[in-house]
Image 1 (cartoon, one colour):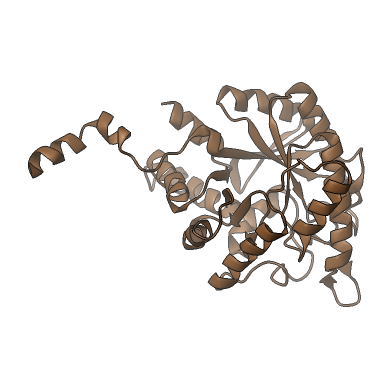
Image 2 (cartoon, one colour; image 1 turned 90 degrees about the horizontal axis):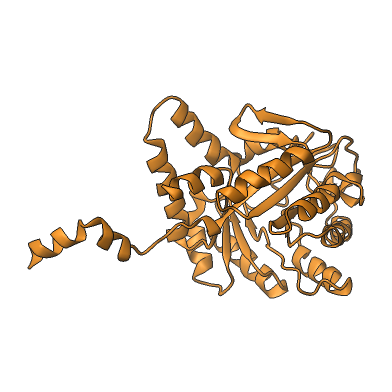
Length: 323
């Protein structure tokens, strides 16, 4: 009986039927980095296959994504001019507002998520407004401008907003602001547990958002703190978040599982730039079976409890799933 059961388990069709964890193309959100200009598609050296693109190129990219079955994207803007308060992010003619409108006009079936933050738009590269005297982020001033940014995105046609700055009280502030502006049904995906991680390096290349002084450890989380990580997500759920997130993903799967066990909300993971770059480097040097390791990584996110995967690998994963 035991031997017969083992033989049955080796049958590929039955193995598929009893598989506990599945990765689907619908689980994926693909990040896009948009800058001013036309005909721009510049590959980022530290992230092979990832590009800074102008709006016209992004519209072409959306066609490719839809052909692969990917209909969800998250937008990051790279403005022509940066200043101390990230003015471009607060302007209806800024890069993200223009991008949202263009994408929704050309591809109304795309689900557009927008990053609500200031690091890409400020000349100092921090996620909020700086208290110059103390060289620290002014939490309350940042909340006020974040609400303006979120409402701007909502009016432009965003389907969901995702505040990534880790300011205290950000979810409640944005929920109240959006509700007050008539966007009661616009969901918020919270970067509820975001660590001050070394895995973000390549992102700062593509988003041109490296801090000009200090680091972000004063408002992002200590990677050593498990209980705080769980509490941060539960707090955002109480403030009105619709989806929670753990970022980075791969080194924090224990946190993903614990948060999943403590909330009924959908949970996202952000498979960040450093995780992406390491796999691409291993692929380049033929150190691993790249496709196999890539899919094992995606399965690990889902097995740990993620419902949504934000990943620069999304197009590759979609192609592998089609096979």
